[in-house]
Length: 205
Image (cartoon, rainbow, N blue to C red):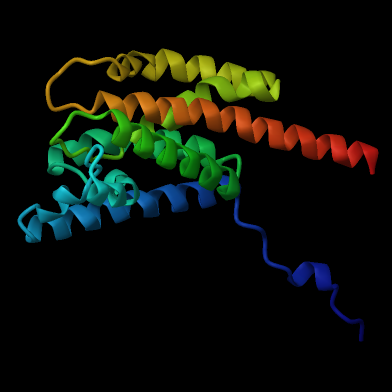
C-alpha cells in the first residue's frame, strides 16, 4: 500500500482578498461596537479625542480615530474606510499596519499642535484621508505602473474629498484631514524607501 502524498493533505492558503476583507471588516465592526458603547454611556467617550495643546488631550491621539460624534458621523466614514482600507490590505496586513500607524500618529500629533483651542477632534476620517493620499502617490514612489493606474482611478472616485483639508465648514476637523493626508504621503515615501533598500540588499547579498 502506497503512502499518501503529503502535499495533497495541506490546506489551501486563504486568498489575500478574503484576508483583506476580514481585517478591514473587523476594524469597522470595532468602530460600531465602540459607538454603541458610547451611545449607552451618553456619548461621554467623545470627550476622549484630541484636545489641542492640552496635556490630557495627548492621550486622544490614541483614541480619536476610533470615536465618532454620533451614528451619522460613523456611517459617513464607513464606506471610504472599507474601500480604501481593503485596497491597502491587498498589499498585506503588515503594509496596512505600517501605513495606518504613520497616519494615526502624524494626523493626531498635527491636530494636537494646530487644532483650535477648547476643541475636541474625533473620527476615522483622519485615516481615510491618509489612506487616500497613500494610495494616490505610492505608485510614484514605488515606480509601479499598476499602482499609478489604481491611484488615478481612486483620484477620479474620491479626489473631491481632498478639499476637506482646507478650512471650511464649522465643526469639521480640517486639521485632522490635512495631517492625516500628510501622514499618508509620508507613509508612501517611507515604505517605498524601505522596500527599495531591501531589494538593494538582496542584490548585494
